Each structure stands twice: as structure tokens, then as C-alpha cells.
Image (cartoon, rainbow, N blue to C red; front, top):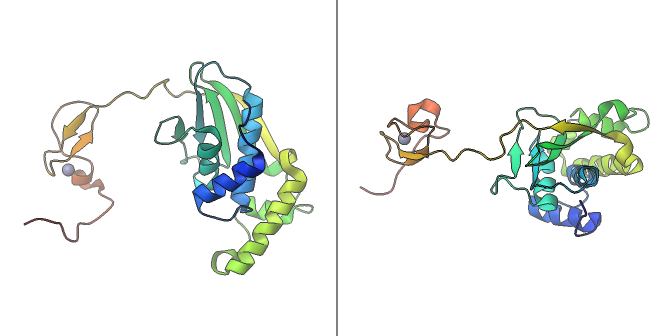
Amino acid sequence: MQLDDTLENYMRKTADFHGCFMKAPGIVIGCHMVEYALELIGEPRGALNAVTETRVCLSDCIQVMTGCTLGNKHLKLADNLGRYALTLYDRDSGEGVRVYLDLSKIDATRHPELHSFHLRQRAPLVLTDMDFRKKSGTKVVKEFLEARREVLSWQRVKVAYARKDPMDPSVPCTVCGEPFLKKTREPGPCPACDGAAYYQVLTSEGP
Ligand SMILES: [Zn+2]
């Protein structure tokens, strides 16, 4: 598929959306990965869908460059996999292409910072010292831009997701009363009231 804009502009747009500077490693690498996947997939007959195997910057690169978002459900989150990879596929056929940052193609001698970035083994100072982080990031980007597609790999894949997510009914919780998405209309407590709440109520409005 053709990009509507230059890669440079897409990196700028993604950085704005993500709220970081344009030459952040995740933005540069992620946008190159999406560009590659779009090129490899050609022109799908059905709607373009995407899967991201990690959150970080990559998911924002996908959302900005392909228009597949979490909200419109064209982007699926498979971040339980935790790999630096994305898949773009045709929703009708399920066929697509998976692109990943390939550790086996990153020469640790030639591109040491990119190698440690991929393994999250950069010096611990990247977490606390912003100046150090920026310098390291610049090195990662420089090394990546020397290699670009030489360190990316791809696979043709067939995605197992259903063409469309089933539309679950919304049923009022028998405890809190808030409607929640449930597989059946049978009454019951919502997961939050059933022990899976991610918060504790401190104060509530009202009497
Ligand atoms: Zn409830």
C-alpha cells in the first residue's frame, strides 16, 4: 500500500501523537517497520487490519500510519507476546505479513547500541539520566539508519482472528449497577465487583 505522506513526516506525526521527540528510537524503528509491512502487503482486497505484539512506540506508529486503531478495532493488541513485531493483514482473507526487528541480523560489534536496545540491556542510566538517554537514543537511531531493512525480517502469515469481533450484550452488574459487556444476558456481577477491580474507591460523589 502507498503511504500518503513521506516517512519523515509520518515520523514527525507519530512523535507528536506519542508525545516524544521525533528521533526517539522506537518512533524511527517502528515507522520503518510499518512502511516495510505496507510495502510487502501490496493492495489487500478487504479492509487493512493490524496486530501489534508490543505496546511501546510501535503501536502508535501503526495507528498513525495505517489508520488501524484500537478504537476502530482494526488494530488488535497481542502485547502478551511482547515481541518487537507487527502484522498487517487483509481482514477478509486473514492473509498478511509479519515484520519484526531481527536480533539475529543485528551485529553486536557493528551496532552495539541497537543490539542492547533490542534486549533492553542498555546502561541503567537511560532510565534516570535524560541527557544520557538522549545520547544513547541518538546512537540507536544512527545505527538503525545504517542498517534499516537489513535488520528487519518478514513472514507471510494467515491470521487466526475472527473477521469481526462478536458484539457482546451489555448487562447491568447485579452489584454496582453499571452495565458491562458480557457473553450472555444472564444477570451477574461485573468482573470488577467480582474481585478483578484495578482500583480501590477512595471517595464517591453523591450522598
Ligand atoms: Zn459491578
